[in-house]
Length: 58
Image (cartoon, rainbow, N blue to C red; front, side, top):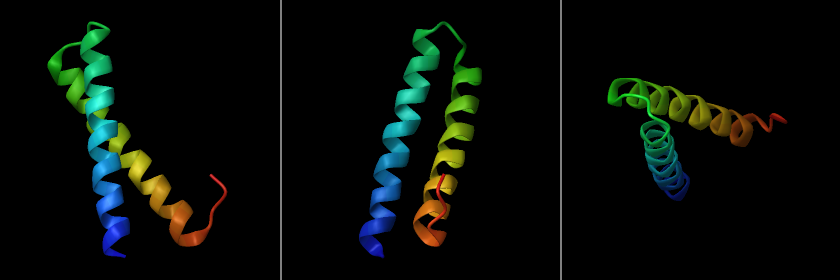
């Protein structure tokens, strides 16, 4: 389980940085990019957790 938690952290950080950089590159401000990156990272991690925990076909 510890390895799985580390996986979520690493993937979450990579996803967050990618969305943040993409938002800034597309010309959005820092605030909008941070908000979008945070929201999408949380949604992605929750969906992945649901898929792994309950076997949901998402």
